[in-house]
Length: 233
Image 1: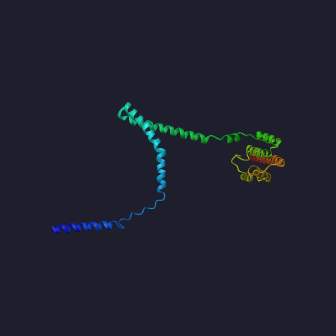
Image 2: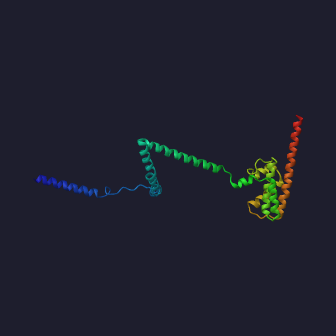
Image 3: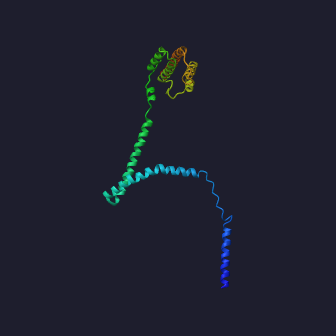
């Protein structure tokens, strides 16, 4: 009996000592948390995503898809869900094709501003410039004269597209000090919002008249030279 009591006391003392050891550091210390600065933000985004899209998705599943599958199963038997799935996929593809075609149609449709501009003819621009000049709308008259001149240059074959040809390219093509002055003043009035005077209107009218006459003479000289070369052959 004394030996059993001593063994019991020894075991109790051992358990007590082990409990005291485990209750002190480093065993009782909690592991340090790993650095995760974006964990809370990502968790909040995930909860928000579930809150926004979870309810509509569950509603779509229970109120639309499940009744469709049950109806197809009741009407067509065990293979009804396959037919319903194929129909759903076909409907999705059809809607996607319609959306793509609609977007392509909208992207390819010209804007109203461009369609109105491309339909302008030189004679209409010239008349509009004269009307603006008569009404004292100097800025508008200068801009219309510039557009009229570009339209005439395009009609004469000097430039291929007046909407894509820049002023710098025109300077290199025309090599004309008259055009340089016209372009500089047009840019100041149109883009720098400088006010235009009647002198600017008169300079635009006379300058474009001179420039177009020079361009016409040069075109005629090139045509005559080509005819002479062709007749000599």
